[in-house]
Image (cartoon, rainbow, N blue to C red):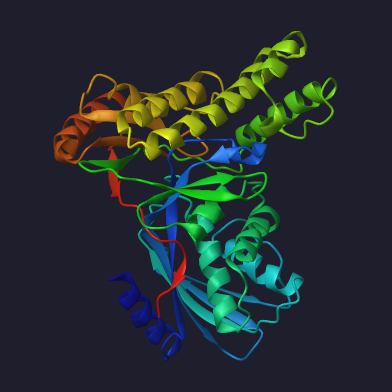
Length: 384
């Protein structure tokens, strides 16, 4: 049990017991990719892979944080919070800074954290870490910060300390997840609705392409700028449009002559993906898993051909499943250019499927495939 490891390491490192232990999960996104920063809809869920963090006050201005997974101790002073050149400590310092900016007094603390969220697989380990730090510090220093405020603090920490201008989805899903439920999140208003995930004899399985991706890279920011360029063009005729969320397909068609091919593809993908997500929620309501799976494939095709954020390895993992009757759907998940695919398949066929796809993937790409079966879990919580 990871919480026991946290306690043992805390005792070893700091000669005392943690006062608070937090569990903060990773997330999957079922459909609705690259729609969050365009103020559209997403359909994420928290998963049963998480980061666990132990905290205790140390009555100084200094903070000592040990990562079990990296085997590293990092230290910083609350009076000298300056982003460092990369590394996990920026996420923690970024959240601590948000408390100070918000006038929420905190003191020095010791922390040990670790977990079983695969790093670099697109399961939002950074959002889980930020949420866990936020909830832990709120509890430790008696601030009772609301979950919504903690989500916003996590996002600002990512923007200002990690330099990644991400949307709100990752933090929201990690914080607000509920067991066996998906969250339809409106990224414009932050209104949300839970939808049942009645999977029956089916399960979600993640396949890690082992192609690493960095969300801070230029391609991610380029996609954002292309979407913003499309919005600017539409606004010339429809001034009430503030984002692609406000755009109807007919508006795009009316302005098509003014779009470059790239900007046209990016914008039509986002508008179509928002529509797919609405249909996917209807499928969940009527327990139509087959229909849901077909929308997953359509989402991947849009990400591959229109948004152009896939890669050959991800395409292989999706295409391999299209003729398998025990696989209902598959798509790339996350920012793209690597990371994981998500598959909806019969639980009884999972072992056979992994055996054949793993062999083919190794022969085709030279890479070993990693697989993560996931269950849908509750969000960030104090567990001790």
